Length: 70
Length: 491
Image (cartoon, rainbow over all chains, first blue to last red; front, side, top):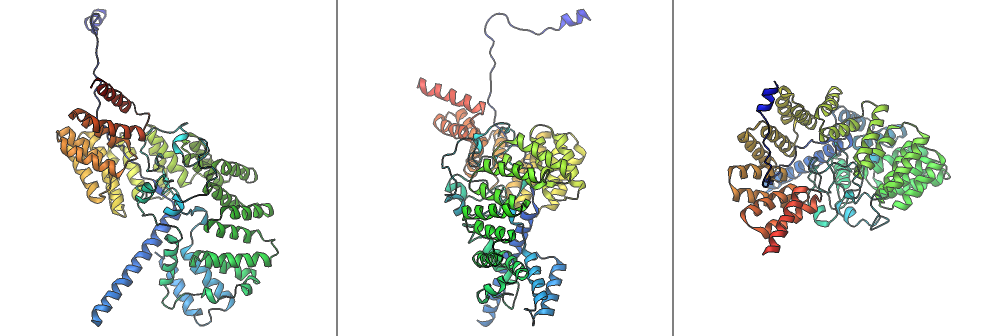
């Protein structure tokens, strides 16, 4: 075993300069954990969505009416 | 959306009482039912309009000392994770594990930032809160009723109602929550508190709520304090703390919470309030401690579990984060966000069998395109992790198809393009990313690196400076700037 160990030794240059090139690599944006929503926020969003849908429907209905009368 | 049962209840009520709508008990019942429909916990509601954010003159100190303000998130770096590990929101805060109405925004520093749609919560910000969401909700509730409003507020004789305390309370809540007419609500509350000879703490709290909505914070503070003297209630502590947070005095709010905890030891909402303030001040380690205290009292507290989970994930312990998120799943939270987080945790904790199924479910549960985009973006990371660059490319593309403003996806796509040697495409993608999200350092840094390689030193320097602004401690950026300065010196 002792012989085996002596066979593989790291090579460190004792003369001259040792230089390590530090290459800058590009960075990826990190994975994103999505935050959970609070109940209040969910309710707010649902109410807002419902309100928007309702306004949208009413607008559509009015347009249809106008088209019929024209 | 009104639930089926509630809608039925409402139609039955109108059928029964339509003709005699003013008959006492029935009238209260109807008012309460209508209020319940649109009721949201007032403690969670913060003014969030652009005008409120930018023209906010309520902060006591315009140039606060570091660590005493919610507006300088970077000031307190103790225990805050670096943006190299944990993504940041527009306001420069690490992303949180839980979204409440007030976390949607953070506090934008400039008009430009405020005008940009917040990218953490994806609902466009109304210009002011008084013209915004609440009025829209108010008109919406009127739209639902074809016969016009249930109570015609302008014809009410408030003095008469103020003399009937039980009726007045129901009426107040109806006006405040359903009609969103804060001024009338305030009138009623003022008359009622007079009638009760200033002895009813409930009315004082309501007056405080109205003042707060109207932006009169100091008056609100007086009312809440006076109510607390009469009767100590957890709610009142929370409302008063909300006032201090609006005045940008987190330290006072913290002290108040601690006072509250002396009266109500182990109260979850107070503990949670402390944790939220620490989190907003970027003091993540203290926040985590308080969230743990919350869990000791209430081990099903979703916000605490989610925040601790995301903390563990971003401090390189995905296995522990996985346990927290699994606990949420067991508790019955079943949403796109949770499954997405589970998928990510599984992948980084090397439980590959669950990863893709979780993401598949997350995709099927996504409610809007922004959510879909975020899930695809994370699948893209899994693809990068297993070295399947084609899949990664497709995933980031899909994220962009679903949400054209996904800055992170642009940046990552640019990195992949660069690996293929498409310099011009990468450059264009990075420019898009950095204009969409100037608060992220990655696109600036990548752009600087590319420009440096192609010999465009001037642009490289400009981009590197921007990167340094977004993330001053980034070693590679510092290195690059130093190198560029040497180049310029030799020229």
